[in-house]
Length: 277
Image 1 (cartoon, rainbow, N blue to C red):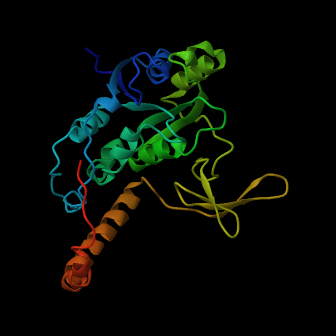
Image 2 (cartoon, rainbow, N blue to C red):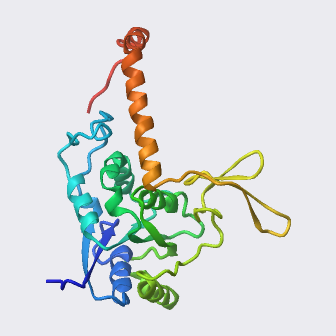
Image 3 (cartoon, helix red, strand yellow):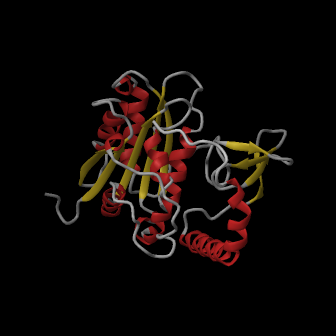
């Protein structure tokens, strides 16, 4: 039983493999956390997370009608003092369970004040060189949407089960993160967006647009990043309030125009044939 001064670390293991890279790296990292702590683990692929029904109940401050493991997961996140999320890279993305959780993100808004600024570490494990795809962006969006303080966002090359432990550099990295998890130090990503650190960008007319915070920046002739326009305040309490009010306004707009919208879409009702398994 953890003492009153003990920290509770929650590890979200995104791989179905027992003692795979996700699991053992989280456990390795936890051994270096300087604060007294307990480590709890959830094997994410075993969770039953149902797709969002887009009913907007949660936006209207009503309970979600879906009965699955989403409530359990959120409860565990609320109880932890720090979060470590690790996922394998499957076909240029994270394990699909994290996108399923993120698709239910409207539920986060009720708890944002309690998840805000909790330290979080993100780790993606890939096999083929440079075949990371959009995996780092998915985990980063999940963490930011919960208002968490991302201490490190890592992409590590390790495909074989437990291979990450064969790399002494990765073990030293785990040690550094563990020792600084509850400090003010951040493992800086010098290659990412100058506003939020995300490495996934779109090419705009004047430079690059971050796909997470939507900050605009360019790179000068010396290779230095030049900030052009700050992006969203994604993940902050202010953002949640603004987004929630916008969503409510859109629902109200639909209710106002419902008859006309239904009249226009009615002719499409019987086009095509639905196929079921």
